[in-house]
Amino acid sequence: MARRLNRALPRRFYDRDAIEVAPELLNKVLVSDEGDERVAARIVEVEAYRGLDDPGSHSYRGRTPRNATMFGPPGGLYTYFTYGMHWCANAVCGPGEQPHAVLLRAAVPLDGLDVMRVRRVKARRDRDLCAGPARLAQAFGLDRAHDGIDLTRGPIRIVDDGMAPPDVPGVSARIGLAPGKGDEFPWRYYVLSDPNVSGRPR
DNA sequence: GGTGTGATCGTA
DNA sequence: ACGATCACACCA
Image (cartoon, rainbow, N blue to C red; front, side, top):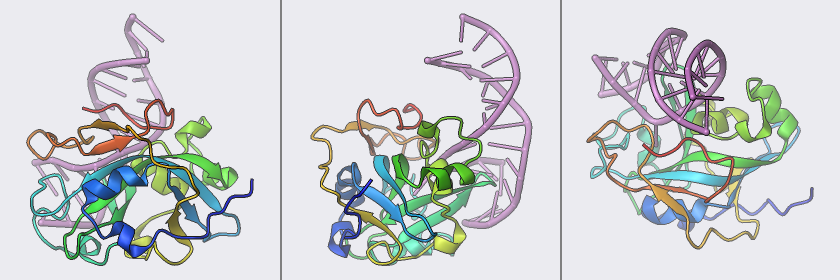
């Protein structure tokens, strides 16, 4: 299906508090032109992670080798390895030097589903291809090699194809945080009633 | 539909 | 020692 997926969101889009950016990323499209075939999916679930004031954020305790990308320019892609087996992907935000980021948690597959299925052999249904942060990263082939790349330019980008974010997104606590580690903040945003949205809030 | 649990290893 | 998770088993 023909789509206008070439114009990446500009750096100024990302150069704001992650809490502002996160809900606006809903219904935007993540695109990869790395391989022979385009892979694209519509973002339907995200979480905002802030800086020194957010105990749930990787940047809470300051800069380390792992989280260095969060301290870099807005519009960067921050990938990290977790649970000894999974990669997850974030869009680095601001404002300015603030080490904020938005975790990309789930998306609706649009293009390149055959490529996604090869990377995610365990996905039984198409709705399982990108339903979860590690699943989404795997479907797009994102890993260590992509940490720090620029989403505002290059083969991997986020674009606005004309679909507005929802007027009223679903909002909940972020998933997977231990009690007292930022789980009290309602910084998960999702498209209501979308079957590709991942697990329930805890 | 739901809940419970093992896998697996870099990071601090 | 633990995680910004997943897949599968099992029960319903």
